Length: 332
Ligand code: CP
Image (cartoon, rainbow, N blue to C red; front, side, top):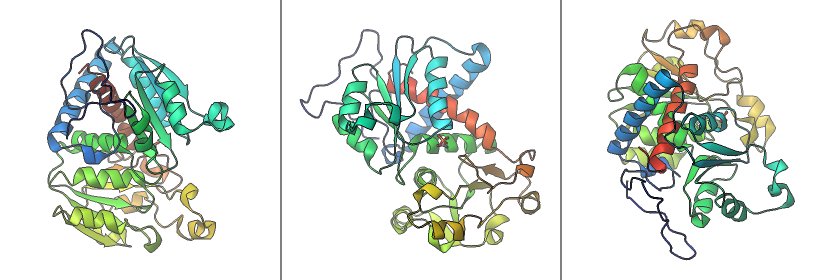
């Protein structure tokens, strides 16, 4: 990662540090906008800190590493996991939160711009987590911000913290990432989680299979980007073709909210459903993942299968987000 200290783009001032803050670390005082900013060794550090966070939570529940720090959670789109896990993360680290989970009850409803909202919240908070329906919104926010912005999903663009927790899940469930054949299934066109995860996986020795209806194929530019990085990739409409070789099956929801034409959504919404019968033909140690929420693409009958990792994935997410907050705020 190219380390860039945050500066106020308007006056070029560098943030000042309270006494006692550590200045080193790959994420200190940085925005988290895209997985493209991470190198392999950054991931190792994040995952090592996440492991420590997990150990501490198991031992003591919460502790005061970020006592006195304030997180603003600014969500222009619905969320359960991302917003709650960031709130749980800052609270378990002894900090506090300004939750704006529903912008219609904020001054956004009166027409306040994103830059003005960011410049207001950073007067109160040390770090801002932002979810927005427009691709590039987090980057725009970062241009105006003196405090770190964490992208919690920008339209069909990226969801970098989800990809980090997905990768951490693969590591914890399999013991390693290298050598894995990862099959991504469902909405690969609009799915920001798969866009970010595919990019992060390209830092490892993996094979990627993309299984989607023609309407929802992985964007060409992303396939080309990974091709240029010598990542083995294959595309098909048929899960059966690749199920037997799959080590990690990453299922995604077909996102109704992304379709301009609802007839197109209706045509593809039930393209794939993972059932116990399908799992019976998969590897016995395959890891079944989903960023959630699911709306029928994984049958509930699968939940009791030990390969179903999606609720463990949710928990791993909190440890990764604890690690990110601690590192961004210079305490890890
Ligand atoms: N995975 C995820 O982003 O879930 P939420 O939309 O509930 O935050």
